[in-house]
Image (cartoon, rainbow, N blue to C red; front, side):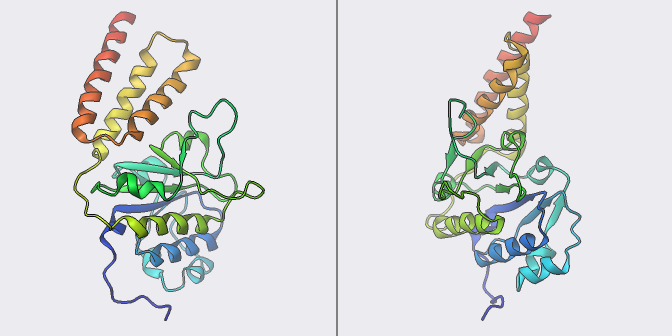
Length: 249
């Protein structure tokens, strides 16, 4: 008991990667590797670390050493997710007050059902233990997920959060075969670039442009468009940005 069995990893688990952003605790990296292995997930990506795993990391990983051995390190979230069609950010922050435009969180059980039929790579992004993902990092994500917890002490340990999301994915993701695809990573990048160009060329006060860009990006990508749909949206956005550019010249 406790060692890895000679059983193929579930097909659905190969569609997700876990991205740890600037993890602060060596033990948590190992604990994350262990819980990933519990649910057949092996694609671990770490931002801001050198990949030289300490004894504490390896001890906490237990028999999931293969997850650590196969882990890749990156300098940024963008680099870590550039082959992914959907980037999902996680946070313990709560929606409150009037400014909730970037705080529309799904629950963990909602995510697999949204993308279950999509044969594309999905990144689950987790921030550092102290403060979690920064606002600008959350704004790089297409969807946001938060684990519902007691308000008196809402922030979970990093490995616990990873375990809950991996469990929910494992529980339902293989219930139906994937029949479609999310937009390609390349098209996702082009769409975000053109949305940014549109926001920056709009005849609106400069201080509002960032908010417009983030809102357009979040709303469009939250709809999980296909490549064909994204191409049509891209054509409209590019034409509008070109028109604004011509009016400015």
